[in-house]
Length: 155
Image 1 (cartoon, one colour):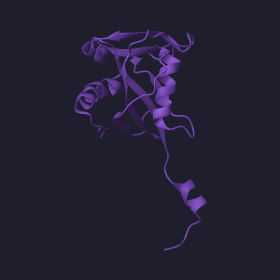
Image 2 (cartoon, one colour):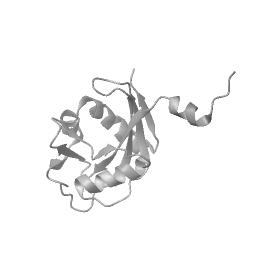
Image 3 (tube, helix red, strand yellow):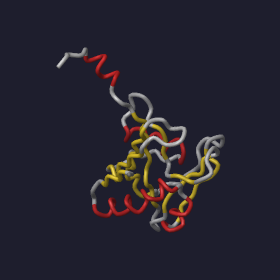
Image 4 (cartoon, one colour):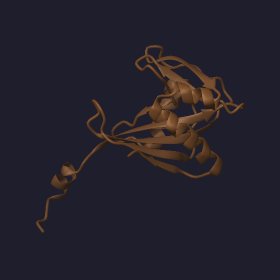
């Protein structure tokens, strides 16, 4: 076996994209969703993890930016992996954290990014979410109830 300089070896490894979001409910167990101006569907408050940023920090940042909630996210509810697809040439790993129960008013962030936001019953939220996010919803709610993290690989 030939020894490879660690810098060269690390540069040769595969890479992936990462995103993080938060599952936030209200006192009536409705789900907080945001409608971005650049998407056709609703989503959990969240976004891409920036270079050098930890996923839970990204979820906390995105929650503040998109919904005006300034609370740290809690436990990791689920990890979802998706193979490269369409214009995305790398795999995507998504982290969904428990954002707790909103007790303060939520307000849409930058109007150029967030068109609207609201709380929806789970069955309505599942219809509004994109397919990949909708499959996360029931798993995340079950993970929250059980106090454990779920892994959702896609085949």
